[in-house]
Image (cartoon, rainbow, N blue to C red):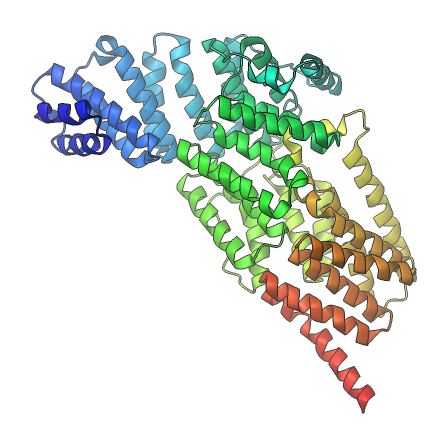
Length: 605
């Protein structure tokens, strides 16, 4: 029976090998004659499973590994007699089980590894896979605890209290180490070969992801810096490119050193090509995309997240749905056609359910609801697990939920709902979403640049409160419009402060200034700024921003008694909302168009 298998092995015919192994597996362990054949079949299933994983067929891979284990189990002492083969089969089966969201199988496999592994190092792959399962199934605190315990066993301790001083100390040390190193010198660094340090780096990266999910961001800034320091001391690891990408993001997005930050982004991509690691290419592409959104044209830069998504799919990394989540949000805010955005969001949610990734499912839902309402649909799915909490016991993504409701209320001019959402937004952790610039946690609030984003937010919040007090003196036609004017100001402020959509902030800045001039009754300056906002959004091809700018200009002219002129802007807003796919929103403008048409008819008569 087994002699036929030596033909594809000798000829190196992968397709024939997979077919032959599959056929023999139909007979099961009882088809083998003796222990020697059982070991041969276990090895062949291991080879077949690896080849299936290289083709991103994780379902078939898991089946091969599972069959290989079944052949080994004919020998009760297989962990003693065939230890290396047993360890590799169980580790491979656990990894494919994670990608297939077969969590029950994964638990059994990792328990077997932890029980039978001869040394601590042999347990680390199982620990890594278990961390991934805990993260994406929602039990993130347990994942964090497991990582910290393992790092401690590897003599890698993070500071117990991460203060601004500690963060800046790590940052200064990293800058000093890199100061005299050119890209060519860095690219010539040897590869990291120390097994324990390789495992430390991998666990640090997983800890970073875990802390992101539960809102414990104090230690996050020092993790990429620590990875870079280890890389400069022990050699470059497969995770080094993504750490350099995160460092470049910090320089560009937090310190406004775009030239230097973009340099490290490009270096990270070059290092990624020099150290080809299929399992980690997606992470480097993902992090490097954040700064590229700001430096390169946004509409095309968004597609880099799709490249990261595809790379994660090929490697079987469950983080694939996180790439898709960020991609969908960027598409929504950059004005891509809503039908395509919603279809992509639904695909992401299906993947999240398949992978039992309740975290991404929870993060995705609020913006999907906004998109569907804009289109005039309401068939929003409800996740099975909609109450995930962070380390403080607060519902995950409270800030994101509040912003989504604020967005929806503003777009549809619903003051009471917008006011409640704004109050909620300012009462929760507004850095709870996965905004790209927040990869360094709250470092920006502790930097020497004195809390740039936070300070600006506080100043604008104070200004909004003063505007609210003064709103009663404004001579608007009705109180609802006056109140909405305050909420619009708040919303535009958030759009400017939100690093995720900073690339569109020129339009929001013009609109914010226009609304401020409108409220101060400086009508001539307001007209100039509204037109500047429209021109900016048109030049950058943000159809959603162009629609919003035209609508706000229309209300400005309507409130100042220039109905005929407002009709032009409402008409353009109607056209752009429809172009975006926001049919329901466009239909809300028809009353203004009909009103303007009626007044024009009266004037003609």
